[in-house]
Length: 389
Image 1 (cartoon, rainbow, N blue to C red):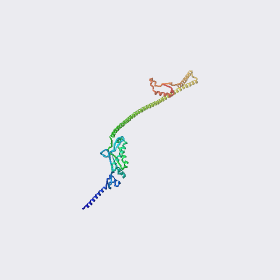
Image 2: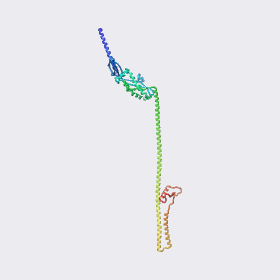
Image 3: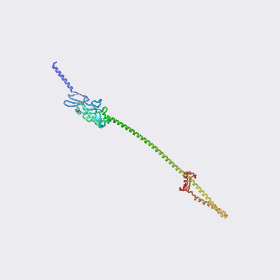
Image 4: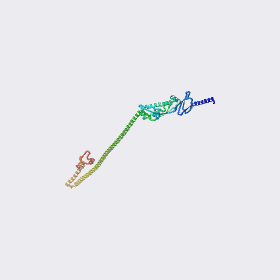
């Protein structure tokens, strides 16, 4: 093989090598989890979202992760590079917001991604700083509305207030950054002053709760005492009312019994007086009949004397002695009849009627007096104005 042949073979080999090198230089790859911004030789900018190999002649390529998850924490075990955002509360207490943030850029359109690339210039830490800056602004706004001690007690509410404003933040969306998630990472951090204030507040709250519990206990004891007092008072009033009712009932019963006894005594007295009146009336009628009989006997004597006188006068055999005897009998009969009538018509009861049993010991039964008075009054022989002793 001559020198010319060797030179030809070398040139061919070099050309092949150069061709292979040029071909390899046009081959590029994109991982599916990334997004690439590609600048061609003519300056054209494109965005590649698909994964796999592709050919480009001498392009400039910038690669960004489609999604990123960052820990912002002061705990080195969670994050050594991303410090937690620091906020100042309304009472000048400070604290750190230990959290995890997930954002995406592949949800933006190509034009927005290209604008984001112009700012980031291929450095995703710039995007991270934008996310952290927005998060700090929102957290600081929420912290300025509460005290640090309240934030400790109500940290869940504090976190939710931040989450509502941070997740899906419209300002970041316009820049092509979509916040998909925001969660707390570990314990929230607070400065020593805030911790001391919180402990003092806890102590005060505990004392307040203890005082309130004691107050509730005292109020309960007071209510129980009042209830017991009202119960005892009601029982005492009930007993007094029952006693008064019993006494009133006894008095009414005694008054009723006395009234019944008085009416009974009156009825018995009236009955006895009526009985005595009937006896007196019967006695009076008996005496009247006896008087009538005596009157008839006197008239018979007078008639007999007159008849005898007439018979003697007719016979003419009467003597002066007989004449005197007959006249005497007639005058006796007339005298009896006249004096009997006068005695009946002139008979009067005494103006003063003494009632009693006639004994000298002064023991008088008022019931007997009532009967005697009613009897005399019904006889009509004395008026109710007659003096009765």
